Image (cartoon, rainbow, N blue to C red; front, side, top):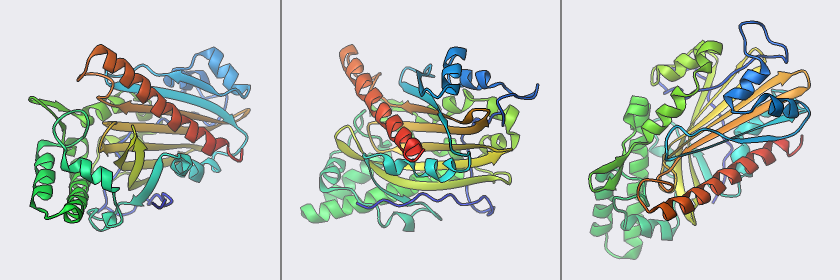
Length: 346
């Protein structure tokens, strides 16, 4: 499979869909004005204490486990000091997924997404899994999507035709989810059918992640309004992009639909990634990457909030413990890939 560089489109067209994800921006210098947070306060937003912020200034990478917003969320953060400029990190962060060995392919989503997904493919074993998709925590589909997949598999004649039909149907499902997100934002994200009348709502997980990071409203009101008013057009100065991506997850190949927001304000920079659909293992994901100049160099903060029903809700306490351990490993690999991307030529 191929990998494609992620390119953000400037926010210039009123017909496009825009950002709905929170970004944390902070003061441009180690000494802040009275109305701006200190570096310690910024660190506290990523759940680092004053001692850890001092260690960050000294060049030590800091890691923390964030307080979860719900019992099916895992959250990690880290911070590092870089000798490179803020601007140097712009494309480096956008391309960080390319350093993740679990990423198999990516492509940009444009228009209604249908033409953009023509190059999206799943391997035969994952197409065979789609034929058996059912309500539960092992796959992320609405009840209607499950019926569509079953219908596509049942009406095809032979293994090759069945896989082709499922590939076409999965493209249609992804395009429909993308179109619904563009039109309705979080409200347009269909819940996952967990069976027995139960549903899991990735939109709620993303909303909790959004509401937990209100510093943006104080520091960058135009970026905040771009999120809060989504899917209305974002103000000037906010760049957005949409992508599909396939990646390895829990021994399988998953596909994700991604919304990326990037912005600069007074020498500071933030890039946010929201995975508003993931076909299995994860429910949703939000990553905040914050870069700002300080007296000692450039501080890079990163926070990853991942929602997954693999850790709670549908199994025994032993299963939940195993699931949490597996998912923490997945998150830590993501963090390590990010660190590799940022520090690679630092």
